[in-house]
Amino acid sequence: MTIMDDFRSDTVTRPDAAMRAAMASAEVGDAVYEDCPTTRRLEAMAAERLGKEVGLFFPSGTQANLAGLMVHCARGDEYLVGHKAHTFLYEGGGAAVLGSIQPQPLPNEPDGTIALALIEGAIKPDDFHHARTRLLTLENTFSGLVLDPAYLAAATELAHRHGLSTHLDGARLMNASVATGCEADGIAQGFDTVSLCLSKGLGAPVGSVLAGSRDLIRTARRLRKMLGGGMRQTGILAAAGIHALEHNVGRLAEDHARAARLADVLAAFPELGSGSAQTNMVFMTPVATDVEAFRRFLADRGIAVGGRYGSLRWVTHLDVDDASVNRVRDACEEYFSGDAPH
Ligand SMILES: *Cc1c(COP(=O)(O)O)cnc(C)c1O
Image (tube, rainbow, N blue to C red; front, side):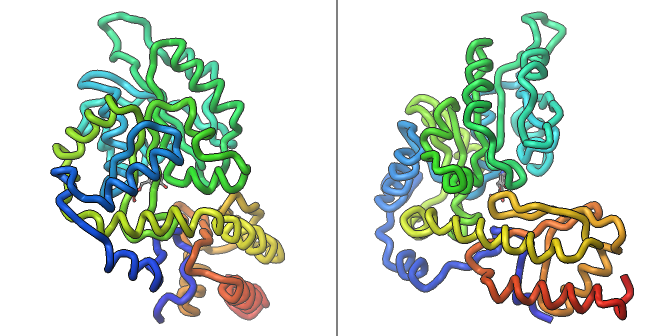
């Protein structure tokens, strides 16, 4: 059965006809020579939205984050990071492996923050026994959760007061912006560098932007080359990113509304456990249901759902609609009607 309704992630979106047309007609040049007009336009546009001097196009969010960490941390330095953060848990240990940067994980609270007292307590004194604490990284949205702007201001102020730099993994920063009505530059304000994914809910096939000051991004450009991310006629990809920023930011509100509706639909099946919508995601950890059997049942009906370790993650995006949510409802009704094995 081919997948018809793919709720695994917002990375699964495929470029639509208008985006493909923008890609096909993009003016290009060699971006390593800084000669690609479309790439430069995307970088300027993203930097402006994020309130930073300069932007730099990257092939992936993972590489943008790694360069972001390496801009601030040298070999033997450490970064403070949430224990469930993408840069710590889902990027292959790249900071340690490729950057020789030691992570100092700190517990994420249920709301995605790290307690300020824990951050302050984890900053090592200047003592040769310790790695040098150089950086605080936060993530927004975090598993779909929007971090409180007052918290972001307090955490980045604390970091800077102690001489640390700050990096924001803003893969889904635009979801946070649309959900709160705060402009992206306001959310990014306290951060020295910020990464933004174009290939999540924004719908581009490839790409992230790292933004920061002119000096930091000059260093990031060197790191990007070293990491193998210096690509040539990237205008074809950047055109998709421009199209995404111009057309697909405001519409994230539709994804958020659809996730809320999906959460309502799923709430009718207590066997699935409770889960509320956070921006474009719904998480649930069923206790009375065999999650893998349920997943297979859905797969047979063309519905794919994400999550691991016994949990379910539903993500809404450009390529699922209300009919997709209805098909989830119908499948759940069938599964939990009593006949099917749970
Ligand atoms: C997707 C994602 C990234 C980057 O992932 P890539 O797949 O490398 O583009 C970084 N942080 C978060 C929170 C993400 O969701």
